Length: 111
Length: 117
Image 1 (cartoon, each protein chain N blue to C red):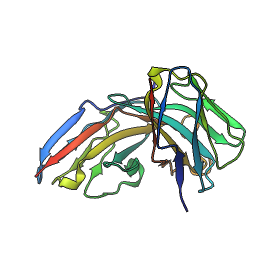
Image 2: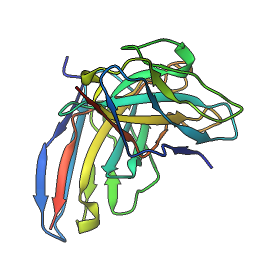
Image 3: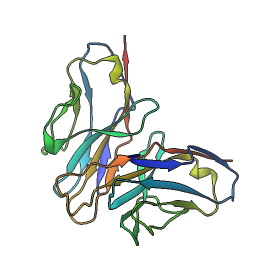
């Protein structure tokens, strides 16, 4: 079964500290992984996807198929990074564009 | 170019009442979907559509109906609201999956906050 696990409901750090938001998945085929972010009073939006291997707003995420993980990292957190972060998986083996979301992690960056 | 719009923004219902949540998009996307967002549970897929006239159930379809008569609109109907349907509802769209196999981003609406008393 497709499943996305984000073990931390809340991650609280100080400005300038490194950040790692954990995401583990279970999927038998070739997954496509995403990180979505929801800032306060804004709509959910795509932050980055593993297939593009890009860094957005200083965040990176590497797909580790051996550990079935897709952790989101940033070396130096900023206050404007405070938001709700969702890891999501989209399967390619049949079906259509269905995203399976994790429960989300709230990142709070303190001054 | 409004993107994905949802109405209403807020709604309070009594148990047993019916209502329709509206979702419209002007991006000519084939794929549209409805999610509900609950604390500690993330976003769960209710129903989705891959084109006009085609709909299918997601993870939590019970208590909800959908139809897709046009590319632009994808309304979500609650026939008899229950307190368990208190949630924030998001509509999302994406380009056709089969034509964009390497591009899987979904675009979300602003959400509708529904309370059922």
